Length: 187
Ligand SMILES: Cc1cc2nc3c(=O)[nH]c(=O)nc-3n(C[C@H](O)[C@H](O)[C@H](O)COP(=O)(O)O)c2cc1C
Image 1 (spheres, rainbow, N blue to C red):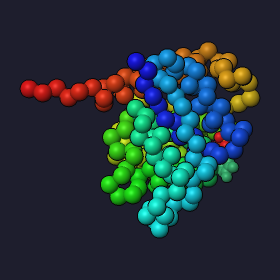
Image 2 (spheres, rainbow, N blue to C red):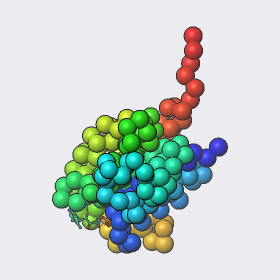
Image 3 (cartoon, rainbow, N blue to C red):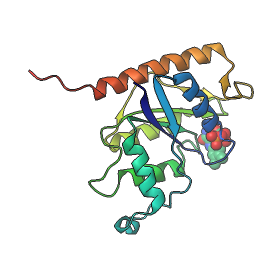
Image 4 (cartoon, protein in one colour):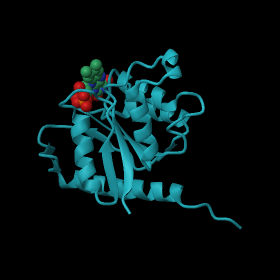
């Protein structure tokens, strides 16, 4: 059975390397994992005053997260952190009180930059924030992608060693999700 993964890409721009990476990873992960990007660009800035009557994009976003078996965050690095757009989406997912869409969701973090740092700083900070939402984050394997032109062409990974890393990552994330979703043993 295919496992549905909601993918939250932290960059809003059309040509985002993180979006390109997410799409290529989706191809590699099939058929075990069905990675679908959930759009966050229409979410209003989080404002607790809007919680009384949730805006339509927020309702849609929370439903997409809740109906998925797991969540994957694909983060850029902006000023040694993750993006404001991603933090905003996390806020909405966690609210209103008692309606936390992230709670208990198996989750993972990957990311791509054009620089050698490969989102290490962004992922470290994102990990701490996502942990606070109650999502069940994987620890290993980690992926810090140093993106360059030609690495992904027409949605296909051109570097065989990177492809191998992504195949391994997909199998391990699928295993993590399956373990968390397995019915608890009773004695
Ligand atoms: C506001 C801003 C801040 C950035 N800060 C960093 C940074 O701290 N570290 C880094 O490696 N790259 C940084 N970059 C470069 C990004 O890695 C690069 O723009 C990348 O393409 C962003 O991801 P995206 O293509 O998915 O939007 C920054 C880019 C922007 C626009």
